[in-house]
Length: 60
Image 1 (tube, rainbow, N blue to C red):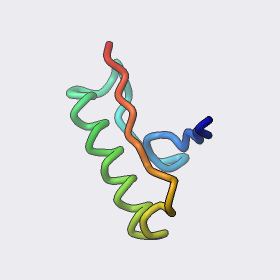
Image 2: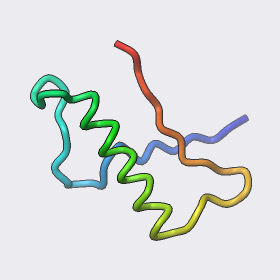
Image 3: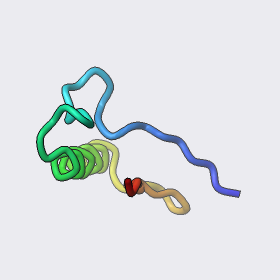
Image 4: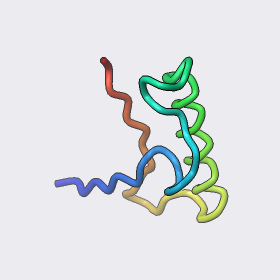
Protein backbone atom coordinates (compact mmCIF):
# COMPACT_ATOMS: atom_id res chain seq x y z
CA UNK A 1 0.00 0.00 0.00
CA UNK A 2 1.62 3.28 -1.07
CA UNK A 3 2.03 6.23 1.26
CA UNK A 4 1.38 9.61 -0.36
CA UNK A 5 2.51 12.92 1.07
CA UNK A 6 1.17 16.01 -0.68
CA UNK A 7 3.72 18.81 -0.41
CA UNK A 8 1.78 21.17 -2.68
CA UNK A 9 2.73 22.72 -5.98
CA UNK A 10 4.92 25.53 -4.67
CA UNK A 11 6.81 26.26 -1.44
CA UNK A 12 4.67 27.55 1.42
CA UNK A 13 3.98 31.30 1.43
CA UNK A 14 5.33 31.81 -2.10
CA UNK A 15 3.40 33.68 -4.76
CA UNK A 16 1.96 31.31 -7.32
CA UNK A 17 -0.59 31.06 -10.13
CA UNK A 18 -4.16 31.15 -8.87
CA UNK A 19 -6.94 29.10 -10.44
CA UNK A 20 -9.61 31.42 -11.81
CA UNK A 21 -7.43 34.51 -11.33
CA UNK A 22 -4.24 33.95 -13.33
CA UNK A 23 -4.32 34.10 -17.11
CA UNK A 24 -2.99 30.87 -18.66
CA UNK A 25 -3.16 29.17 -15.24
CA UNK A 26 -2.63 25.61 -16.45
CA UNK A 27 0.61 26.39 -18.30
CA UNK A 28 2.02 28.54 -15.50
CA UNK A 29 1.06 26.04 -12.82
CA UNK A 30 2.82 23.21 -14.68
CA UNK A 31 5.95 25.37 -14.94
CA UNK A 32 5.81 26.22 -11.23
CA UNK A 33 5.46 22.58 -10.24
CA UNK A 34 8.32 21.53 -12.53
CA UNK A 35 10.54 24.29 -11.09
CA UNK A 36 9.67 23.28 -7.52
CA UNK A 37 10.43 19.61 -8.29
CA UNK A 38 13.78 20.57 -9.85
CA UNK A 39 14.63 22.73 -6.82
CA UNK A 40 13.86 19.91 -4.39
CA UNK A 41 16.02 17.49 -6.37
CA UNK A 42 18.76 20.11 -6.66
CA UNK A 43 18.75 20.69 -2.91
CA UNK A 44 18.22 17.16 -1.58
CA UNK A 45 19.23 14.94 -4.52
CA UNK A 46 17.05 12.39 -6.25
CA UNK A 47 14.46 10.54 -4.18
CA UNK A 48 15.73 7.37 -2.51
CA UNK A 49 14.92 3.95 -3.95
CA UNK A 50 11.22 3.20 -3.71
CA UNK A 51 10.23 6.87 -3.53
CA UNK A 52 9.33 9.34 -6.25
CA UNK A 53 8.27 12.92 -6.78
CA UNK A 54 5.19 12.77 -8.95
CA UNK A 55 3.26 15.58 -10.58
CA UNK A 56 -0.48 15.04 -10.45
CA UNK A 57 -2.76 16.61 -13.00
CA UNK A 58 -6.47 16.88 -12.41
CA UNK A 59 -8.48 17.07 -15.61
CA UNK A 60 -11.33 19.50 -15.40
